[in-house]
Length: 299
View 1: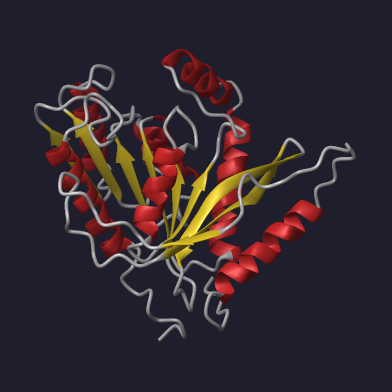
View 2 (view 1 turned 90 degrees about the vertical axis):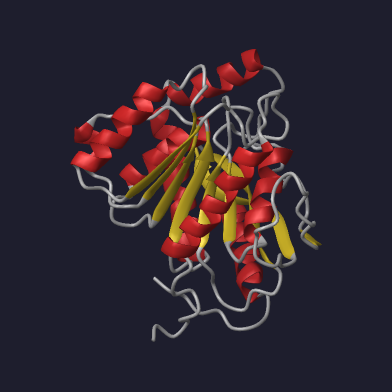
């Protein structure tokens, strides 16, 4: 559904109003206040560092806000919402899903960078506001989702509803890294006739054709040949299954790089692979999300 909301920044204003209404509708009777993690901010997009690549389109200034987009188990869930500050009409949206570290500054920076290319971005939170700084803590947070997948399903359903109906995005994609990449694939199966594109960075994948048969969204998979936990044979099996099922896909395996090659905070970061993967991501979203984002009147 394409919703027209006239006036500069009126889309963001309407979303803020919706967030207030969601908070007001919280039916919990406890006395504790529910407050956002931060207020809104407007920032000029930063220049891209040389080692990350310079093939982004001209970056637009973005406006960001920590706002509620869901209510799970009677608790509001806050995500990081970003959009170009000069947005006149609803734009294509991307739901961004964090690694097992949680919704941290790295994910917010990625959301800012993607939004500066002309997208609404909602970085969701599957860990109830918690983040981790070491693998043991991150594993516990991840297991909390594995043990209660329906809460996570409800979370991403609410995120999809938020960007498609409340924000009026004409097309919706998903992107995630590792743990989040698995959920980007899950979203393509949860919304087989609604999600328009899914980008998976070095995540565990499946070759179960009964599950993959539901896919309709094009898939971009970006993997590391030397990943110690996502073995290349599982990636090849995933690719083979997609080919047998005739699903639209692009799978890129980077030779000589390890897991988390796209994360600048990781020891395995590889600037060349990260740059190429980001450029592929932008081209993929341009092809599948942004093709008709200028047709506000449906013409």
